[in-house]
Length: 311
Image (cartoon, rainbow, N blue to C red; front, side, top):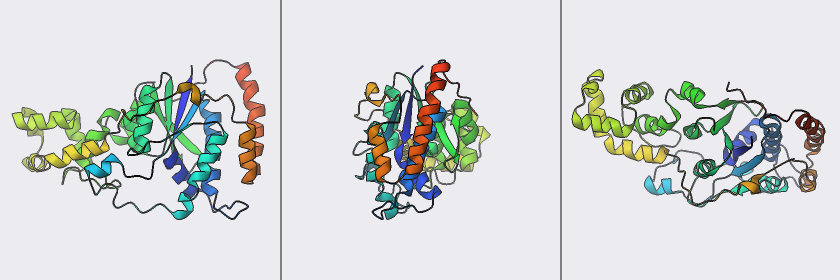
């Protein structure tokens, strides 16, 4: 079975930057995030055994969410300059490995990933540190692989694992955020509704739309909640609708997945070795050589699909 690994470029690059100490290239520029990203790429190739790989990045232009809500992500600090200067280098290294990069003005990498995942005719594993992407998990077709400790430890999330982590099913994550809000992205949710109440409401009504229909019809199930909660929901209806719209990852971005373009048999390419050599990443070149020697015999000896346990 073929498998496409979709990497959330910004999330993994950010994690790499903060996980590793300062590291400079021969020209004095900072490259710790480039090193960490490449190291993570090697680990993904060894652990997940992808037949296809692609990377998605944010674009610098404002997205449609900023147009919907001016305060969207307003509290997030500006990207560290020592990280932002490494983005071009990471793009170059990814290209040297023959891996395509997808990005679209006006959309976040999350939306690009969501659209590519839905288009994929093969199994998709999304590599990210962003819990929002758990909403894309769908049966065995779309899974996520999320670091849990630095860059060295990660686990696969299916629908069961996603629900255990957030308390709601993957498809309900936008509804959950519509009610409880999201402090990191700075959108409100319904004032006074916390995570526990949001979970209880969704367990009873399933979605924000069903909840507000129940309020209009004075559904008998509303008696399970206090009059104060119902009043907060009534006053926060507009915020709930807006917040769900902001939280919903788009899967209709105008982008086309060319599956053959993302096919990768080996990371050991002359262009990749040259790129790593230029950055003085000699330890990574040795890892690349070792991977090439050890992975190929295993794949020839055992041709069946490697099993991925859902931890």
